[in-house]
Image 1 (cartoon, rainbow, N blue to C red):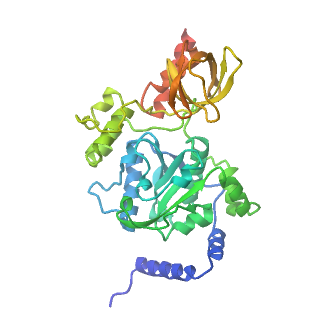
Image 2: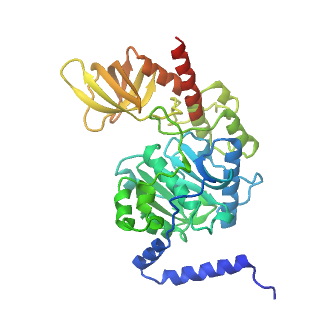
Image 3: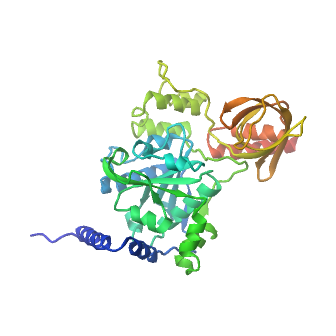
Length: 438
């Protein structure tokens, strides 16, 4: 009889520990899990976390994810050796990578709710989460290289740190949602205080090859107080409150942003062609509705060449209005020229001749003219004359801008200069140089 392999022994041991663990009271189990926390407040400089944006970085992330999902039974092997989902084609999905000595050893994707919805919507009810208000993002596609899984969270915790900082500072997100295997849900409940969604266990989750899944959510507005209650006062390597909310890790390379945009698109025409036409059949596996949405998002001729042809038939409920690649969240104040009205707004879309604004607590009278003061970025502001045109939806109004000033023009030019967040940075450098030369 052959001796069991080390891998089988580890699996048997882990299974035995889980069974023994399950007999402990719920509160004691969570306390024991938290007692195992060990986050390094000073990782080595060889560890770098950043947005995956090059073909090589994305390829390594998708390959690492494929191997992890296949090993766990969450997907069948794909001939490409990659796991690429429709959500990875969207500018509202950000994939991050952890690199050690320039080699990808971990990855995670943040999928903000957009035209495709969220992966777990097909199986879980998000009604209670939506009722609290705020944007929702699904944390998905998490994988750590086997060589780094048993190293005390040296890759996992920095990935989570990047996720937390990015979602709270850059991604304009209030709620995180996850769908994970039932064997792993208690890790998220115990460490980060995720709360289960109403349908506790879905026995066959299509997005994970029919494996069972549990859905859960975390309110980021409430998270700091929860983390302080659980971890405040603990030693540095066990204090997740300080780690997530106070510690500045130089290993985290956050994206450069001049303006208050809320996503960081990376998919160029070449990258979409590579991952969704050449390496996988990603485009062919999408629906005609999704094709139309992609054309509305990437509405430039260089993208039209690589995207699937627009379907000839009209699909009910699909709007072809352009969906901005660079979503914005600009604070603004509108002061009426007559009557003394003054409203604090949030701008959500911008163009050379207008914008869309949000106002939850009151109504903007149609036809009102006045001064619109906008904070475009940390060091950029604009003051223009504007007029309220119409109500778009509840709490959202369209406004006309009569004479955009230089700051407004530069912002629009930069955002329309290309498809990726790097394009915006390059455009701003070019525009600044042109302004100095005048």
